[in-house]
Image (tube, rainbow, N blue to C red; front, side, top):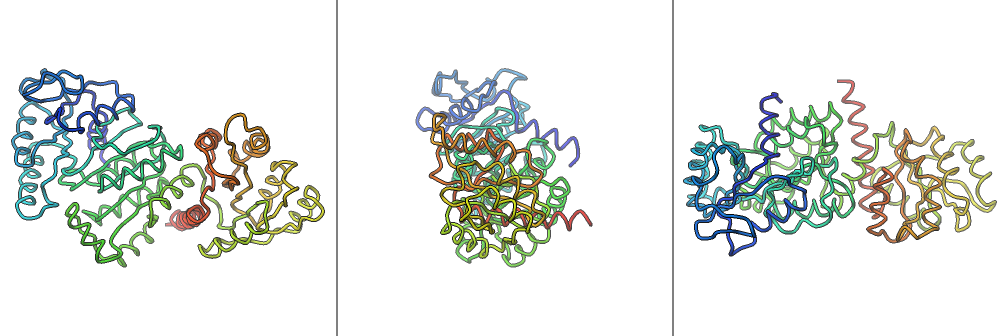
Amino acid sequence: MEQATYERMKRFFSPGHIAVVGASTRNQWFSNIVKYADRAGFPGSFYPINPNAEEVAGIRAYPSIRDLPPDTVDFAVVMVKSALVQGVIEELEEKGIRNVLLISSGFAEMGGEGAARQDRLTRFCRENDILLMGPNCLGFINLAANVSTFSGGSVEGELLAGNIAVIGQSGATTEMIATKLLKKSLGISLFATTGNEALLTSEDIMEYLVHDGKTRVITGFMEGFRDISRMKEIALEAAKRQIPIILIKVGRSEKAKQAARSHTGALAGNDSVMEGFFRQYGIVRVDTIEELSETAGIFSRCRLPKGGRLGICTLSGGLCGLYADLCGRYGIELPGLSERTVAALKAVLPEFAQPDNPLDVTGSGFWGGMGEILKILLEDENIDIVAPLSFVPASADDSMPMLFNQTFLPMAAGSPKPVIPLCFREMTEFARKYYHEHGVYFIEHPEDSFKAIAHLIGYAEFQRGFSGR
């Protein structure tokens, strides 16, 4: 990415003074923008434009774009009827405002006249150096810079800054993804909804994120790509920097393709060709929001393993069987333990315990803690990843889980091999933050988590082949 393009994108996603054209006292859109900006810690100012109100959401309103203070506003949000948008964008250009978020719908997603309207708008923006996001989108939250222009209302959870980026061509679906990540105490660098992508595309944002220095994992909800050859180059650069791209890409069924075309005007493409493209360039494809959030969580907290052999430790023979079946389903190898490991485990476990993989420490064997058991498993040359037993603390006063976990969590965070605690008991909001503070991710829902581990193993294998290119 050229430095000038990168700097332009950086300015776009970190404005200081934002005009909102169409800010109304009769709907929630502007108040949503203000609410999320406040939650994100936005230090800048809003300039709502409404000719019929002195203030909107408690903020002084301006009657027109011309009345904005000179040389102050560096970004505009536009949410007026589609027929009025062209004139508004032209007025913003005259005012020198060339970074624009267009929330309004009624463009290419409608076909016919709407598509023609979008084409005219796109030409004008290109000719006048206007960077436009949208139309038909909800905006963005840039937690790395404490900025939000988000007009939706359904992103829940603490707006925690982190290293996972979220890009979506569907506003509501992307809200669900962001909420899932935040509820798991997985921080977000940039959350962006792109809508019709008249000018600024998902590819543009992914390329920016590959270079931004804040993002370790890129996730997204995609209905279609605008430029496959460019996406290939972005994927290669991401692979070079070991920044995984994890996507839900709809279009496996004909109905999904039709939905994509009617939603944002995107072309879903040939799915079998797309599947091969993803495999070739190291893009991780997932099918559900839950699978995406688990995969992003593991990728964001775990180093890449040197191989794909998993060691599991729990306290139930039944769970050993359940986890073994899941590993078999998703192609995860459960190697036998070395003779040295078996002998070392017999020395620290009850005499009736039978060391194997998965390892059942039994209902008595965990009382000595997990520290020595994890150390033994990590030293086994047959194992590349360890999923040790962990008890979920309900609160800071929940002494037994806290004492048990403290025997191994410090070792887990600094281990050269990935360590992913396998949680026993129901997960709590306190526990999610607790594991986050210890720098580890956790297995909460085995079905999606073992899929995620399989993705981690697959991406590590891709990287080993990629490094040899």
